[in-house]
Amino acid sequence: MSKVVNGRYTAEIDGDFVVFQIGMRINKPWAVHKWLPVFKAMPPMIRELYENPELGFLHANFYTTLRGPVVLQYWRSFEQLERYARHGAVHLQAWREFNRKVAASGAVGIFHETFIVAQGQYECLYHNVPVFGLAKAGRHVPATGRRETAARRLGRDSDPAVPTPPAPSM
Image 1 (cartoon, rainbow, N blue to C red):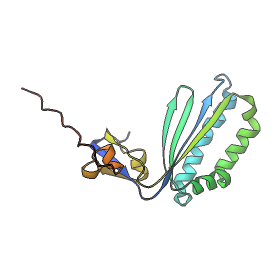
Image 2 (image 1 turned 60 degrees about the horizontal axis):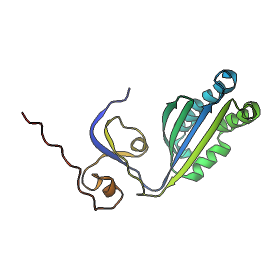
Image 3 (image 1 turned 60 degrees about the vertical axis):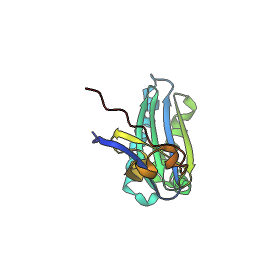
Image 4 (image 1 turned 30 degrees about the horizontal axis):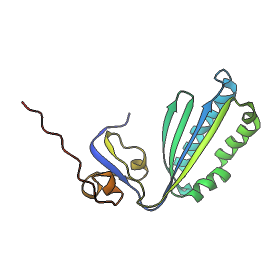
């Protein structure tokens, strides 16, 4: 279990980056022989990516829904993400197997979304949670001063500072 970091933090990352969301949806829960191989294909890919930082992969967070897993990934560039998708040994094998054995059955669906984020065109806040997400892909820094509000983190200085709740009366 990750250690909770008390306080208000944000993330910083140098340059542009890519957010890539990929997941699967189990459409026919009884067709375990179809969706389980798809489910089991992701961990080896993630392991390959963490073991080869030169591929441009920065970090991944895993989420579960009632119908299947979703992985939120951070990449240094779209070109590196696409290069891995088209040439990464583990991914290419999984992609081929899905198309050959599962895709036509409709038992499981897959999806992905890609977002290219320009430098400085993001903001995030982490309050009393473990370091994760963009803070793990980049740097976890205190949300103070120019990082104190969403508008300030985006370079729009008009927002007032975060209101401090009054102390409880005794």
